[in-house]
Image 1: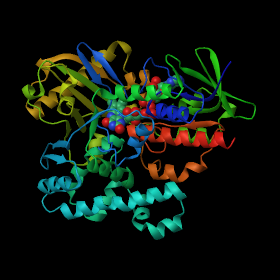
Image 2: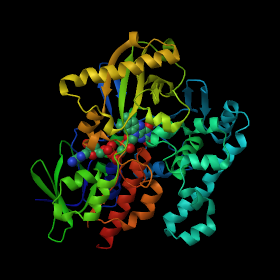
Image 3: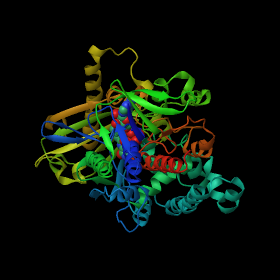
Image 4: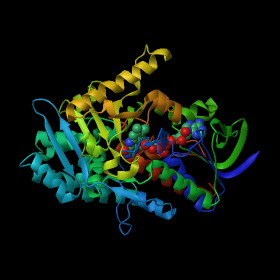
Length: 502
Ligand SMILES: Cc1cc2nc3c(=O)[nH]c(=O)nc-3n(C[C@H](O)[C@H](O)[C@H](O)COP(=O)(O)OP(=O)(O)OC[C@H]3O[C@@H](n4cnc5c(N)ncnc54)[C@H](O)[C@@H]3O)c2cc1C
């Protein structure tokens, strides 16, 4: 029997942040990871002479260490910072059709407003009013983090926060009077949160947009793997341990229903506290049914699984200049309306293509470049009659349609330059991450199950004693920052409870 203070299940961003911070506080910590590498989504892989970024399009981390945001603070506390390369343009968005447009938005408050005004003359004041809301929203969030939720106080001090909290992103923009075309352009990032803007909480969306406007998008110089390895090194420096190829198949409970350990590779490991970076559905499926509160099971079953993707990774035998590319992120859509973009997601509704060489020029061998296609998908979109023998053809055809479409929109020749190609689908993500339906965003951030209601109700959730959760399936939704931040939140809770002997 092996005994630890804390066991962390899963070495994704959330698990690694939680484990390293707990180890730093002096507790004997073990991470069990089912894969042979750390990072979960935050990883890379090699095909031929190319190393491909597996997931990250863009990270949002303050450029200067004097003004640290939450993610930089975590890396800083762990002495795990890695060099980042920044990109001044937020994105280019090409919308085809009668009411279409082709615009580039720049990062930075004034530059962003200027680029919006160039795209939609006359929209500057309303967009400014919208962005300026973030000041009050941030202050309200800080207040809640410090003092908890008291509606009467919030109403008095932060009236716009409360007014906005129960509305969708579309409601908020409409109420402020942003012209329709400007709304459509501002809505481009909906895919990063996995829900169309009429169903996505207004505060959540504004926070994402404002973060990218304030801090230019950035990428680690050596792909996400560098971020994950840097966290693992921090964990080990603080005396923590990580075991790979160690899938947790069972969560163990005492007679009072408290979680006391896990089983991996047929061995039992015990600890005072267990942190799960694994989605609750999979924890509950690997637990004694009697240990899981009815309410917790009901909640997991009531939630909709969030977005996943089909992704296409291309290594090309030409430079991005030779290909005719000049942008890092290009969003392509057939329709200016975010709801229809979401509903037509299998038919060019909206997709993104990234060329990492724009941000990190030597991210692929000299004379080459890479393209990364991200095609939105919901777990339920997998064709029901797809059999293993037809899977390869299905995914190749799906990828080819989008490569052809991209060639036509940009007027470039991609096909004849392909040296390496890899295609991932929800099946791939299910295999690597072990998530139901291959979902990569945890639970869908839609309707009643949004960040605001998750935060407001978090203390009423029926919890299993000694078991803590962190990761993209948690209260802050998906994304690298959410993973790291919920990991740090779980670490705080665990350390506090260990200190108080709870
Ligand atoms: C293609 C793609 C593009 C993305 N783009 C962006 C982006 O541009 N910006 C952004 O911020 N976010 C992006 N994301 C989302 C982001 O990557 C995720 O939200 C975030 O990394 C999830 O972190 P997590 O902590 O939930 O852990 P996960 O990455 O889900 O990792 C969980 C870990 O647990 C392990 N595990 C699972 N079951 C077990 C078990 N039983 N026993 C032991 N280990 C187990 C898995 O192997 C995995 O290592 C993208 C994701 C994908 C896939």
